[in-house]
Image (tube, rainbow, N blue to C red; front, side):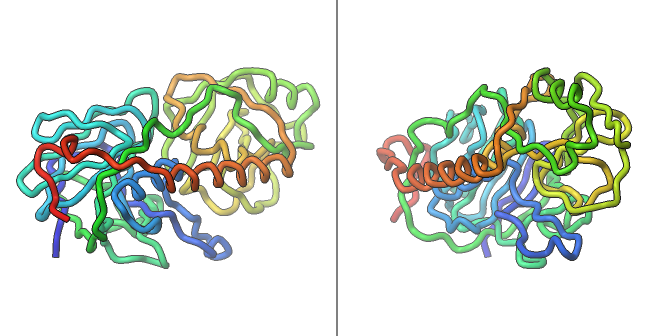
Length: 323
């Protein structure tokens, strides 16, 4: 069996795949990557099946070695990458030979990064997924964040060539689009207008479960407690603090706070990548528009994955993997 060894690691690195499906009725949320398009691109760059597991990190990557030659790619945003001190680039795949140290530095102007290894991280699936759910200690590597000294198994790789995206997956400064409700009637008209017209600041209070937005108070005239009902990724709950809580990948599957709106699925990865201290604004769209935007986004991503560019072999130093 082959392994990737963790020499140094950032504070929020976990094993993730595309997440668990069909278990929300049992209180198990999907988990999976915070920025699924970036995760999918990383897997495609190294020739992996889309369901292969990789590493998700927040802020800072770490340093890694492998027991056999692999291909790797780092996505999510701009970041310093070194192979024994020689610079590499995000959004491209490279060869990583045994004995060479891969070092991934701090992300710039984003939050979540992804490291894909050819063959995938081959930890045992739990409830149909290798994704880590930190709140419940489920899946991944012993259900926890990774730490220095961990050794993770690597699956068998399919032969491929090194690839490049050509340019980073698109980002945008446009407002985060939301579908209002399901409890927007708990909020007065002027409060709903404040929600849509004012800027909010991404708070340091954030993790894979939720992120808090600071800004003007959003008071619920109908009260901040409801009979618990289902949540989905992007649900914007408003507890008695009058702050916005946006539920993310490891959210609880039900909650007892009114939800003023839900972030459109197409924009949830973009919100997840907004750096702490930055401002965001919201724009209202219909459910129909949200569905159409998601369909278009998925079509665009499929086109990107189908048109990755082969890299010249000379870019694959130090070392090359023989075909």
